[in-house]
Length: 554
Ligand code: TEU
Ligand code: CA
Image (tube, rainbow, N blue to C red):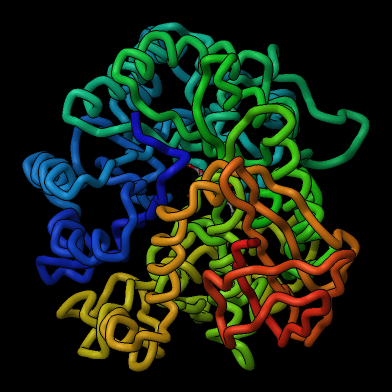
């Protein structure tokens, strides 16, 4: 089993990582060519977003064949070589397991659709409509009805894109098929799975309307999220697969509640080992089930601190475990959400990294974050993300937002922001490829790139490297208790990480204002890392915007 509490995990979104064969699309050989770079950074585990055969309506999260590698990413031999090269470097591999749905191009689905007596019909949710309307009023995650029409009065459930058909986990054969896929890759030597929207696999019995008294589509909320059977299925999966191979289970549960997350990951429950939560990434996005894209991510430092406290405390008290991330392929890069790239680019990139690496929980890095890549506002015609394109239409159709405004909002939130190619150098096409990449490149690659980061000892890259090193040297950062100080402070987040051997103190100004903090009693400490000037630990500390420190208390 991966020693996940002492790991730093790097997410690769393959399409935009590195192209090796001059087609403008990242691929497996491209990944292999950068393993030494990742090893040097200090990470010890990779989570690889989907590389399986897929029509790419949702860039790999719509799988048409679990046992084949997408042509544009390479072959099964390339994949086997990747596993081997990772082993040589002692880097573990987590595959993405997309098991809530398959592509509608999957042979199971095609058979279900074309053959009324197919055994595969029960692999999915097919249902009759109601008076010319879909079977129920559920709103899809990506906008519009959750149902896609099969014929005049028959529909199938598609909780995400209309080409991602939800699998019926109540059918034992479905579960066994998924376990078979897992075993296939575990036998090849992978170390575990990041399980896509795994908290959606139990749908409310009978698929009833949600809030039937209300008009229009309703977010199904607890009718598809964290249902009671999710725990049963995860227990079964653990018993039948994960435990046998000593493999890691990491849940991606969108909108996972605190209690469910703790239950999924409490070792006593024998389900999975780690989960993500989305409270930080959903900040300024509206409350559970009440997304409001128009909020444009506006949030307060108080909320940021409250969420941090809530999850850190829960883990201490309830024995669950989370992976901490600020960016991923589904969100705009965090540096522009929580930092300030105009005035405090380096400071805020480093302060936020320091935050993510000093919390209890395994830190994740999303490709390009370690060199301070930023978001690129794409023209509407250049958008690739189905969620964004569909949401603009839904905003217009359902909420009557004028199209130009809906597009503005969409451009702000589209996942494309974080999906531009990794900027390796200031050469043509940022060293990502030798031809025009599949999605537009951020022109700032001229000055934001890996090559320059490697050369400059003060770069964001070198700061990440030091943070990873620090987690290796200070056990308290990995497993120590989290104790917050000066909770009510409006700008600064201050906490200790403590174990029997040492006490660390972390101070982070989360805002673009200078701020003072006064402790109840004086501390003495050795500075371990800072993102600006070396500063003695005193009773009153004056911090510049986004200034951050880690001290070892003596
Ligand atoms: O994302 C699930 C999820 O939580 C999304 O609805 C997310 O909230 C949204 O995209 C934010 O903009 C997972 C994958 O990470 C995502 O890439 C897939 O599109 C989705 O599942 C469906 O497989
Ligand atoms: Ca390629």
